[in-house]
Amino acid sequence: MGNGSGMANRKEVMEIYIYWFLLAIILIGLEMVTGTFYLLVVAIAMAVGGVAALLGAGMAWQLVFGAVTGVAGTIVLRRWKSAQPADAPNANFDVGQPVRVIKWNDSGSARVFYRGAEWDAELESADIPREGTLYIAAVRGSGLVLTHRKQQ
Image 1 (cartoon, helix red, strand yellow):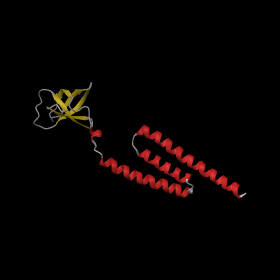
Image 2 (cartoon, rainbow, N blue to C red):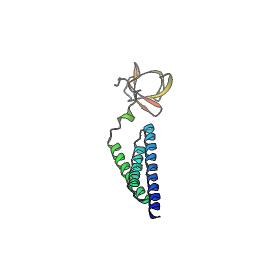
Image 3 (cartoon, one colour):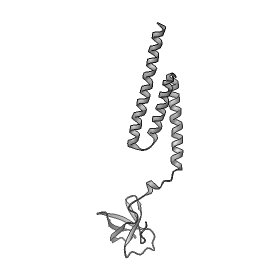
Image 4 (cartoon, rainbow, N blue to C red):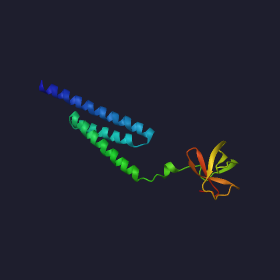
């Protein structure tokens, strides 16, 4: 009788680690869609919980190992992301593109035509000539900042 109950417990432990690994695989699939790496950290934490279950650790230890791995992985990921340069979010394909001024306002702002629509715009500095071709220097919210120099 003792052997039979031991086998039942061993079977339950084996089933639990399968769930851990299935969750990890699902999270890896979701990570491929989002690309944030945070789901990858959680997936690794699930896999660590699965390894703990596979090695026979109790549920409390599985949860502890998974949680510690998740927290440590999140801390490492946040430090890594903060050390990365942030040029990709600032990359703007509109910078350097020419615009056609429709009308100048008394305040120095302008209404320009760009990409098939009218936009509010302002000059980069007050000493920029209003004649000739103007180019987009930056995008601020829904408005354009204009300059007389074409930027690369």
